[in-house]
Amino acid sequence: MSKLMDMGYKMKNDHAVPTPSKPGGDNKINYPSLHLYDKVPPDLMKKEIGAKCRVEIVGKIISKGISESGQNKNENLTIEIEKMGYIGPAGKKTKEEYLNSSKEDRESYDKEDLKVDEED
Image (cartoon, rainbow, N blue to C red; front, side, top):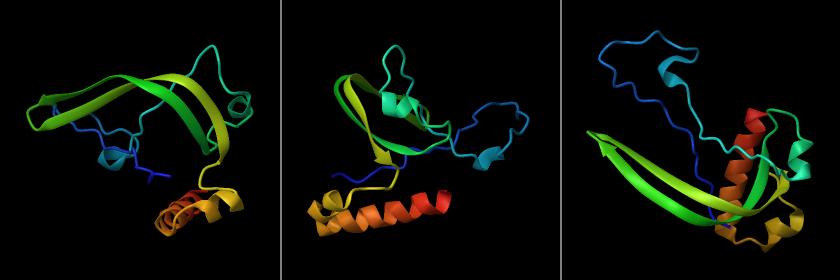
């Protein structure tokens, strides 16, 4: 199991004219989103809006790139999703999965699990 990467980012405002502050202001953390259509795993459709969950995606990377403008660097990646499924609530593993993971992965998982519990 690889370590989870926090996907949050702060918007960079490079406009010459200041824009009115939005709720959350400059400290608001934004997250990329994944939009599914036509075919959605049933277990995910049963979840309430706002529920945090772990999913597994099997796919193929079909494009990637980096665009740079001044000091701004934006990475992009497109994955063609071949299979997708619900694993469980975010931060939760089965006892068997936990015991089969390495000591390093357990420590990383425990830290991630604490973060999820704090958010709930």
